Amino acid sequence: MLRKVMLGLGITFLAVLVLLAVFGPILRHSPYSQAAHPNLSPGNGFWLGTDELGRDVFARLAYGARVSLFVGFTVQIVALAVGILMGVLGTFSPKWISAAILRFTDGMFAFPDILLGILLIGVFQSAVKTGGGVVIDTLPIVIVLSITAWPSYTRLVVTQLATLKDREFVVAATASGASTFYIVTRHILPQLWGILLAVSMVELAGTILAESTLSFIGIGVKPPTPSWGNMIDSARQAMNSNPSLLLWPCLCLSLTIFALNFVGDGLRAAFDPKGR
Amino acid sequence: MRLAKALLLRLLFGLFSLIFISFVTFAAGEFAPGDRAIVEAGEHARPETIAMLRHRYHLDEPWIFRYGYFLRDAVHLDFGNSYIGTKQPVSARIKATAPMTLKIACFAILLASIVGLLMGTIAAVWQGKFADGFVLSVSTLGVTLPNFVLIPIFVYIFAIKLDYLPQTWEVQLKGPEYLYLILPVVALALRPMALLTRLTRASLVDTMQQEFMRMATAKGVPFWRRILRHGLRNAILPVVTAIGTSFGFLLTGSFVAERAFAIPGLGSAGIEAIQSGDTPMIQATVLLAGATFIVVNLLVDLVLPLLDPSIREAQV
Image 1 (spheres, rainbow over the protein chains, first blue to last red):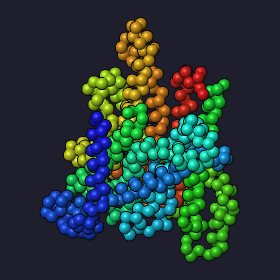
Image 2 (image 1 turned 180 degrees about the vertical axis):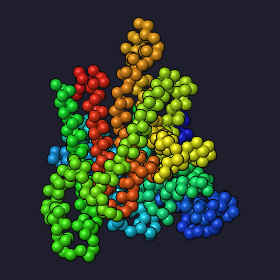
Image 3 (image 1 turned 90 degrees about the vertical axis):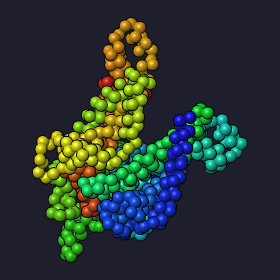
Image 4 (image 1 turned 135 degrees about the vertical axis):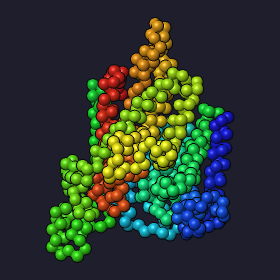
């Protein structure tokens, strides 16, 4: 029961967040330009006040939501596609291909946390340009986080396929002459969508967190493009004069991560046949 | 015999992981924009100088040889010269910064292990009671909230409002060093602490339902002796493994903590290197952090059979 309430609350919060990300930045003021005096308190024509440079906090927060959601969803879609493909190839292709894929996946797990992301961003960042909308500004981080995100899907798909591929319905389909491709796409993968969707919510939280972490330490989304991570960083540096700037980005990020975890939990319970 | 085989396999996997991360780190450097020889000699150097440098850095040889040289130098902690500033050897910078990072990480993992085991045991003993609920909800917060959200909150409370602790590191410390380390260590320890708490609780709750625990109750073993000697002794194995894995997360977490507190450690040096595009320093930072993670986890897995006779006998 509690799980269902949390699932509902999580979905509602995420829906509001999507609206905020789409319409927020165009609603009132620009998230980039100085619109008024710095450090205005909420009200005064600015819903959440202005930051240490006189920019609209609400607009920046909404743009941060846009950055986080765009990065999160793009990375997860790429990672799902690559992860599933690698998982299927790692199970059904000839031994020498599948062994190489599985060892490579194992190797990717040898990098702790965001270390691989740090390496790739560090070495290749001088080759990228920034300053042109959400897609261009986040392109490097989307590429890097996609590269680090797919192996966990491959691992999940491989373990799931290991139990599914010897089940009766697969044997029956093989016996009736279905090709491996047909069996995988029509019989096996449809069994996995539920669990993949549930896991992707938790993974999405991880990606959003990784983006904010990289932006916080100054190597992810760079100012003046707002992201929750670099907003927390600049609010932290202005903490002695205006600590209230910390509140909104910290709150948004934490609630988003909580909401995604609740939704992931709720979906997993809903899709798990044992739970019904 | 089977144990020896399992340990050998584990060792081989550790070796494979080390080779993998060293190769990826090397490859990133190979594909990095900018020619190392030109960077070192300057834009307007004579062709002979550049040719000489290309030869010195083996840029005129196939990449597989270069990877060999890279490995050989990395084993000797030689990562070449920095691209930036006075072009000092990277190893000097690492020797100056790594001890600080290691100190903070070790304190943090120590704190996380002690508090995690304690809280997890308390929660498991009073399972379903108030203490359990409290520990569980706090540890859920600790697992979910990122440390860069918690750090500013801590700084605001303990350094600005209460003024007990210094806000950031300073070139001239105005007090004993440990005062400056408290907030970073605690901030770094919270996430592993919460993970270890939950794991200890789950593992101990599982263990307490087993036959031998009822047996111990039946033959009259005192309560705490039962929990500590019979329960925790058996429940601790997955926790020890998790201590190893969280050590790796501490190494990347120290990027965040060191930046937030301006601590002169490997994390700060790494961030500086990334911002200035100093490829050798970035490679060194990543390789050291990754190798430490792999070696610590390898050691943990090799030590586990010593802790648990049942692994020694029934290893897959």
